[in-house]
Amino acid sequence: MSYTPAPRPAEARDLLYFTTPALWPTWPFLPVIRPREGGYDCGLLFDARQAMDLTGYSATVFLGNLFCLPPTLDDFLELPREVFDTPEELAAAGWRVDWASCQDKGEHTMSELFDAVAARLKAIFTARAALELEAELILGHIERKAALLRRADELDREGLGELAAELRNHAGRLDPRRPAEAVPPALPAPAPGGQVALTLPETLPKDDGDLTAPPGPAPRRKAR
Image 1: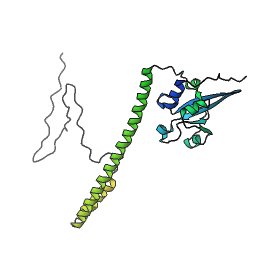
Image 2: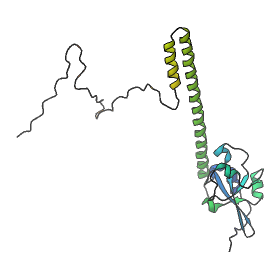
Image 3: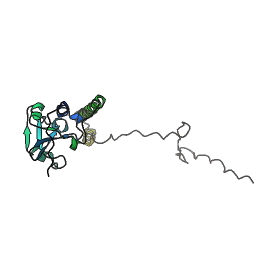
Image 4: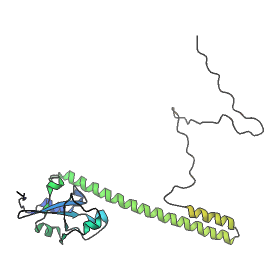
């Protein structure tokens, strides 16, 4: 005997979830369901704009199951779909949030809803800031490399071909994915008590005379 969910009209929380991907428990997908005679249709909303920077899918239901997703994005986008202009049209076509698949009954306090939205916005802003920082680093690397090559051309015109070749070689080794070649030496870790523990060699370099370090203190004898 097949199970047919009882039809119900669209509720405010359905439309809220349709339009607020930050609330989706299974982001970037939201399982939806449409009861029909003898069973039901399963579908998925996909937050393509935030997940893959794709537009035009905000009111599109991809016919499929959350537990049987295709292996690639291209395969997923080839699934049969129903396209609507607005979330209200989507609800009017009979689609509802499938709370059972979400394992979420949609019962949230206002504080929980605001926290979920804030967390998703923070993730979006962090990703965009990282992309902007990466672009700035790449631009700085290109400008630095171009300046070195221009300076090498000037050295050539001054008759300093050897220095120009060395500078070009250095510019060719620059890579923004690797740290700089010249890394300042690290200081030794502080010893207990806040003082820096320095380890000196037993024998210092000789200059005009022997500058060997004086012997350390004699070992202490055990008291009898």
